[in-house]
Structure formats: structure tokens, C-alpha cells
Image (cartoon, rainbow, N blue to C red; front, side):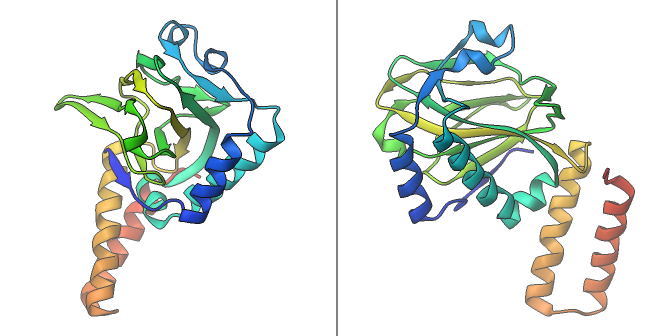
Length: 220
């Protein structure tokens, strides 16, 4: 399942993070790529030893974790590293698949949180491959795309401007993607049912089914 989630960040968050990013020290992104991915990776990443990087990534993680749709879709168990990436004109990230283990965490899901106005740069689309074909994503700032770490994907070269994004990986409580998608859809349905009809016999049956499926499939 690939899902786009809006309004991860407030306007205040965005303004302050964008301002802070101008003061953060960025280094060659190849330092965090696997041995094969280094051949196709050309970007900059916020230096891990910069205090501003640590504070910014901690703030971004809090906002991501707190978003209810993200929590429903991902069922996070443990987060791997978060990175603040910058692409300037001529930079891109060629076709690759993410490492199976990122920072000691099994990477079930990857995400990209866009931090730059899409009209301020050309190119830079995140392109994800699937059996149905390729899908390109270039979202509004503060919006996130969540997708399976098992997919081949790339970032198209930036032709003009600067693309700033936060990327990360996580291990889900529900390892199987089909089960995770089913739980997301059932959880969405039960919440809408409750909003429309309140707690009744039908809601109780749907709620029971959701919770017992989660109990069967969750890994904690």
C-alpha cells in the first residue's frame, strides 16, 4: 500500500524548520547509502553531529508519530533513522531499494515528508515502481508519502531550485503488508461507523473483528 498523508506539519512548523535548515550544515549523502546505492546517490544530508539537525529531526519525528492516519497505516513498532535530505540543481537519487535493516531496525516501510513548495523547484519527483507501473510524487510541504521499503524507487534529478525532505524507515507491528492494509481499511471503516452511528451492535461487531485480527497479527 502506498498512501499520501497530508498536514503532518503546521504552517508554524514548516516556517521554523525551513528557516532552521538554512543554518544546518549539510554533507555528502553518500555517507548513509549502502554500497550499491552509493553509485546512484547524489544529494546532501544534514550533518548528524550538528545540534540543529538533532533538534529538527526530533521535532519531525514527534509530528509524524502523532498523526492518527500515519499511526493507522504504519502501525509503527520501532523507527529507524530519520534523515534531512537536500537536493540542489543536478542532484538526484537513482533507482534503488532500501536496505533491509536500517539503524538496527527492519525496514518494513519507508516515508518521505516533503518540506519545500513544489513550485519552487523543477524535477525531484519521488518515483515508486510497482506491478501497476511507476507512480511519481511531488507533494505540498508538510505532506508525506508512506510506501513499502521493498519497492524499487528513485528521486528524479532536480533541474532548478532546491528540494528539501525528511526521509525515514520503520518496523511495523504488523509485518505482512496485506494484513496491514486490511487492518487500515477496517480501522478506517469502524471509525467512520462510530462517527456516523455511535456505539451500537454493528459497531461492536466491527470493533471486535478489528481488535481480534490485530491481536492475531501484531508483533510486539
